[in-house]
Image 1: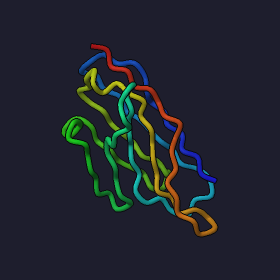
Image 2: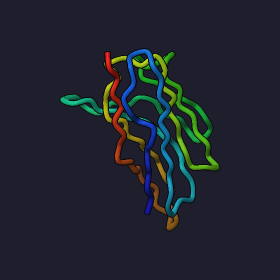
Image 3: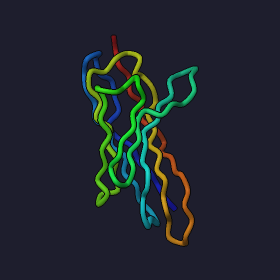
Image 4: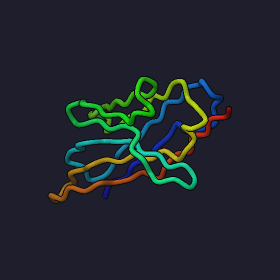
Length: 120
């Protein structure tokens, strides 16, 4: 019904930058809040940032001032610009979207995740 595909992960030295993208496709009527989560080995998944359909953003304290979430509604895409990366940012980053699909249902969907590794 709905697919979310992330890209942009990789290996980067501490202090570097990466930009993640997540594209939604499928039987979509509208996409409400879109978000990025991350999970490091041995830890629980945590919210990194989210953005409403109107553009209101919210960030985890640990990334404020370093990460920026944005979206292009026409392209059904959400981005995460990550600057001043630290070793603690190493994790699998996953995209989440609250989607209204053709047929009337509204559900959360997840991407498969993309690995971000920051070398110290």
